[in-house]
Length: 299
Picture 1 (cartoon, one colour):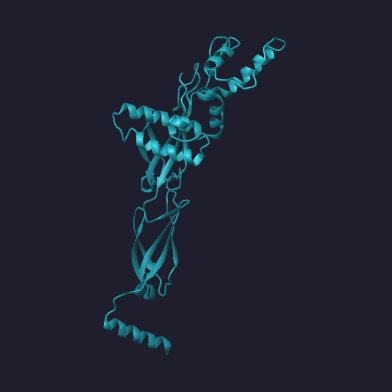
Picture 2 (cartoon, one colour):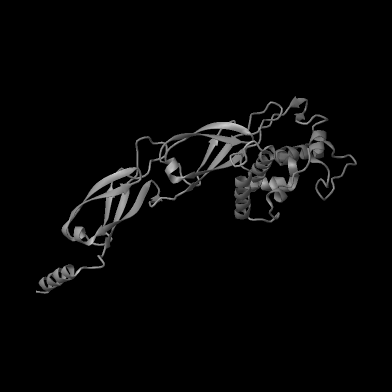
């Protein structure tokens, strides 16, 4: 198996930060995503490689193993154990370990020799290894996750039917067991980890399960009271405005917020802040009436 330089693949230096790796991965994942490049085998291959590189380099522990063992990073613990066993077996012999690690030798060949000519065999028994975990990022809009929905994802060339619960949050990670790479020597498949990247392009601010919005309130309704209709996330609602409502007053609409993740029928609250609008372009009559009102207030 040829060595793949994941750093070069993502276009980052070996000393790149986690943020630099994440940004590089997102850019390339969007570029080569199958939905953007339908029926493009080369883009599909690149997409797989980019996901694999991110799976390794975005995980500090995996990255450390990759830096040490290259393409055979998944078997780092087996290498270390096998190395220790060989050292014990060869004590008293003329064998001496070199100080520079394994040099430039192929780790797969080394692994095979450690277990007596059969990769994945130790002491005459087959060693099973779990397959590689896959990592993917799913981009959605906030309105997309207000209701539970089903979506088909393409991960490493395979289509996966996924149910996305309402209320999933930006940055949340879910695991789909057994949808990663194939195991070795009959070992179990790896898992698929999906990170949600959710864009809020609405006028509502989301904090936890609560929503926040600002509503313009005309001066006359604020002073005299009345009824207004406002937008909620999924429709309209009527509100009674109390007389002499002050600018910045907050009201709570219970249960009109965002769905609570995996709690069907449960919602946060919607908090509305009134922003009183001062009328402009007053007519002569309006100015006259306001002047009269001002005189009354001073009396």
